[in-house]
Image (tube, rainbow, N blue to C red; front, top):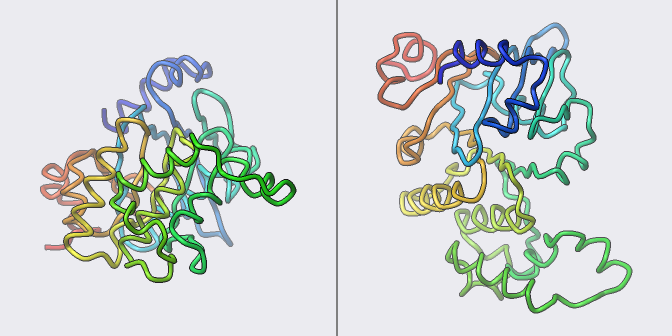
Length: 266
């Protein structure tokens, strides 16, 4: 479904967004703008991502990709418009409350603790971990330990569970950051440039991991690496100057003159 069709469907049901949210879209935004000092960083009429979909967002620097994630995650308040998650209006919810609702975010630079081991980083990412361990210093339960080991095995980090994070490769740090994120079973994953700085093998393995994860999560990937985008083989949204320029698969987009002119080049 392209943006025009999405807007038409939304208008048909508006303002009863819960009917759309429950039926099709996990995330939906309407009339969403973000203006900074007169500059409109995001200007989207309507845009949605379905449940268990992996959606890739591309575009030139300054296109509004990261700002869009900021608006969805609550890091930034929109100037106008509405963000719906599971049919509920979360536009003005606190960032922490949005995270508790099931929206997890991995930033471009992996947020891991260098002085802790891979396993200790995972321990710290357990739901309620910081508060509980600060006051009660409880140990990890058997089921939590098993879950951590299963995730680490899935991302090929089980053998490095006792390795301090500072000794991991950049790709391994990316996988650890994603693993820490999925430990709390978020419904929506916002993943910012996961292929940045990876080797060819790490890029391939990261694509495989994200494709596996979409069976259990809805995923939005912000990316610049077109080879990586092709490996994901998913629907792509192209942003340019804050607006949706085009949507479709890579075959459609590489033949789109506007996309070529604005981003892909000749």
